[in-house]
Image (tube, rainbow over all chains, first blue to last red; front, side, top):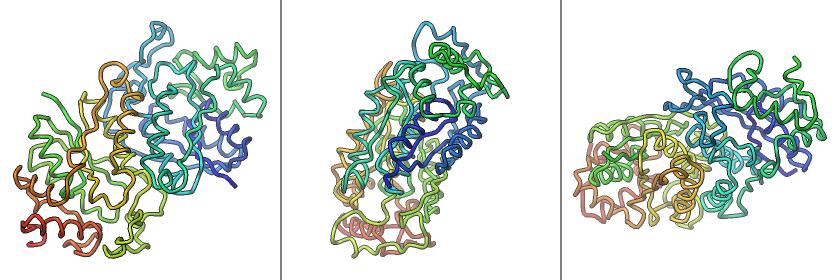
Length: 221
Length: 221
């Protein structure tokens, strides 16, 4: 059976990505990161999403001993969604985060002989993160081809970004068609018990469900 | 003062790289990794090398919960140098290691506003590791340009590989001219108190000092 490493965050995008990978016939190995994020609660959601589909699940714990992101540093305020309207890269940006995540995924993929890495980034709602752009994923694919044993000896691990062209509403509709249990996902940056409803991530989620004409079970609970 | 992140392993190549970065006028921030390597003793050597030049020093601890490399898995035998004569990628290869290391270095560089990352890889003696080849570093430089805030907003962090064209003997001669304290470095893959003298890494070190016509203080102790 062909294998894929799936980067899982606990949010809805990566959950839809996991269900898509499974629907495409891959045996899925989920990877989640404990990197000091303030919304560490997402790890529990990621575990439940992986379990919902019977996928393997692993947490990588790492020290990121530098600050500078409001997603790591609790002394900084999370930006409210309205602060983003002027564009630019928001303070929740974590330097090199997707590069680090993909590097671990690549190492894992090579170790278990997986052919692909699935990552649920999307360009339209990408919140200004440079490491969510198509040109970044193209560049990383070259790294996978040139910097690994599999890339040199057989064929490189593929970097698959199935949501890249989709809107949030489109992702939600795809998830509904695949039976993604959205009630098990958590997109909020705040570490509160219920989603805060006002951070960047909540803002896009609420907007997406509204546009898709679907009720979000996460806000019903 | 311009800053550089320097990847330090405790071995002689990275020590020479650190002294080169300092000689080029950079304020150096060393990064070393505790990733479950069998020769964890190298961390102490790295710390001493950084201290010898008054550089900042940080250890990143991470879980790499997969096996498959004789450098991580103590149940596997380290290859003796003669086993390598047939070419190919040796069993000490750790999937994606330099990709992971460079990713952390890039994240760190962005956080502290460093302009460069120095890494002491070299092609001639690279022991068959795909993530030590020039084409890999070129690919990673594109990732730094496309996948980071600094790459998008100002200029990308440069990936500097000052040893890439040098032989081991050439690296040692450069180190001597810069006053690198080779007695503080450790290149051996075995975790023994003294260098084993027979692993891949010892083999190239002994050969290099011999060709340079210099006595290795590490073997004198």
